[in-house]
Length: 165
Image (tube, rainbow, N blue to C red; front, top):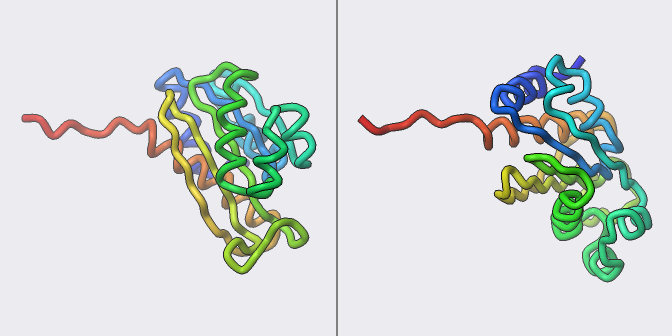
């Protein structure tokens, strides 16, 4: 069952008639899967692409190979490029890309340890970049990342009360 954060985000998206699409690397489809389990999924979820391997990022979404080689497949720069390119493949109000390191053996460094997740969202044309480091095993990291996306989106679309008198 999806977390309360995902349920709240999904409901808020549906209330505002907003749709979303994902391009996932580190979460390998879990983001789309969790949102697909909400009561409002049919109203909000357009779809998603899983580009786990770097070659798929290049071949499917046409991310320049030089960008991946220069910054690594799990980087803020590549995540931004994925989100921007997703817009041409899946029409939606919100586009989210996610990359990161859930297990050892990737591009981890002391500055970018396992658990580092990059999120890039384009919410109604407004870009938002986020870098988080989560603790735990691969599944815990993925679930925390998915929840963080839901919180980020919910925060971005929540109507702030007016302070005008």
